[in-house]
Image 1 (cartoon, rainbow, N blue to C red):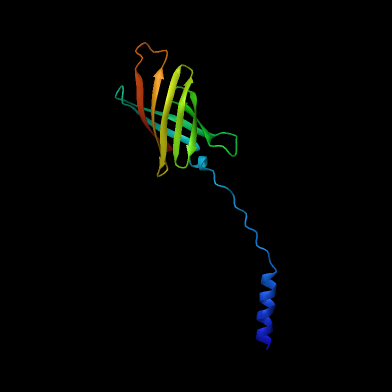
Image 2 (spheres, one colour):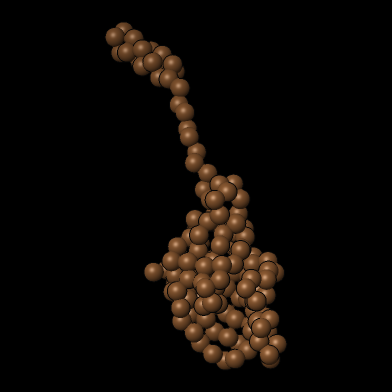
Length: 136
């Protein structure tokens, strides 16, 4: 009898409790944010360059925008959009450079493929680049 009363008491106690689950939304941009060492290969000039880059989130908590700083080793900041594990760099003109490209996150490294037109250069060749960003 005592055992049955104990079980009933526990069931009544448990049924009167409310469980609240708070889910914190995950922001895909967090996978891309940080300081990186860049290894950039220019297909146009067959040249390899090494420099530092930084990726920061836009201040809008619900957007998908990031900014890539020291892009192309020129001290410029490029706007990009994150969609899951992918980046889109829409066509944009910044300080005499016209830039567009794409990227992806793989095993903690970021792979970028982009084209850069230097509007101040006399040769007017588009520089096609492949860059790998390694976390520092």
